[in-house]
Length: 149
Image (tube, rainbow, N blue to C red; front, side, top):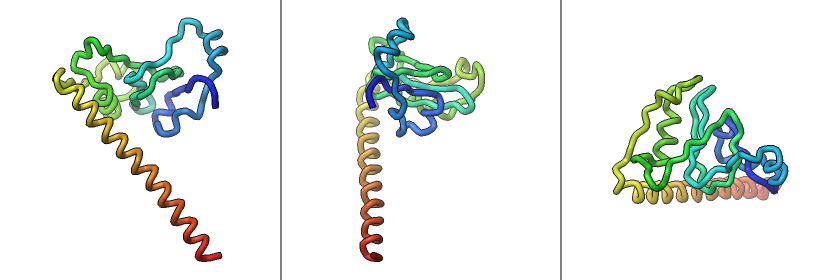
């Protein structure tokens, strides 16, 4: 339960499970002295067997090859928004070298901040709904168990 979270290519199929694999911080630093960790807003992606992507909300994660990191500079994003880039990657062509031909949508600079805020609010609401749905399922199971015992 301690150490850096490791994100592998297979984790991108089910991002809610990211965090299960970890590596000791000191061991990682010793074995990979020139490696860097992700930053908030980095897009972690893979190209095969299918294209998949996830936006790291917190940073400080280790990305295991063949997964890769696309970092958008905050000082000059060029119209790129991490969440939009991740959505574009999910529907993109896959396979070796396919990422070089991906077409990524761009957003007007004045729209980036409000768009990211709206998407974050939607993600928070979705996450809350998932928690509520899980609790309702547990409640239903307990109710059935209580009524039938």
